[in-house]
Image (cartoon, rainbow, N blue to C red; front, side, top):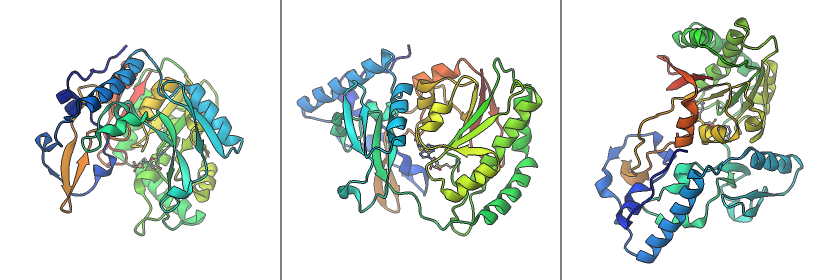
Length: 368
Ligand SMILES: C[S@@+](CC[C@H](N)C(=O)[O-])C[C@H]1O[C@@H](n2cnc3c(N)ncnc32)[C@H](O)[C@@H]1O
């Protein structure tokens, strides 16, 4: 079992345990370096509490305790499907708590809906330099959060179809498409693939700054390329390859359009429950820790997702400047790797996807 380092002193508590900073991806930034971190925690009682909490979470994780067990997601899915107003979710200590699926009044000025919160092991075990005691709130790996989705104008179904045809042509003629086909026709599969389940490919129907997102269109077009390449090799065992996609930003036009091209939209967390050992999971820069969830729920037959960095990840929070404003940026992205993810991918053959067109970013094909 992979292990995580324990904090060993007050200094290491303040320096070793830091977390995510998704907000940091855009805009010019000035790195002020780790020496500018907030001062170490002086209060020994708080340090002791932090250590105790961290050691507890780390001990559970290292003992093999799953953060995202299939049964927990199944239970949550059933409660949502049953139309409950409140759902019960257990935390890492198996303590249940109740969450409203209706936006509480206190959140109504910014939120219009709930979403499922997935907390990576990094966020569960790292300390924010400005709010170190935040970690004492016993955050659960799965919870309910309140949010709103971007309200860009919707393109019509006809506009989406036309934009998709254009992006698909561009995709089919691209070097990245050829590279993907080449990997899927040459890599050795030890099992059949009957399903493709995609995560976080983004909405097609929303128009931002007068244009659709080419990346999202191409990523959806790539699903058909994968299915065709696998079928031509007989990796599908003669069965139709079922294609599913999960992204909470999809709207009705997306659902209708994707259905027309053979992709079934599923609500969170159903996508994770669709995964079995004959599934290819496709995920591109999702806003949730897809890799860590999949590593806990079910090892699939193949994955095409952001390259797992198997080396040491940076653990430092950094103070950055954007538009003259200081803010803390964590080194860890929304879909971070973990020891468990690294352990899982070590059982797969890998081939990085050269993507000069930047349709995906840094992806790797993993095959069992
Ligand atoms: C940074 S965008 C990436 C979009 C696109 N893949 C790209 O590369 O441009 C992150 C995406 O993750 C999606 N996402 C957030 N929560 C999700 C969830 N629970 N399941 C699947 N996708 C999710 C967001 O809606 C968004 O479309």
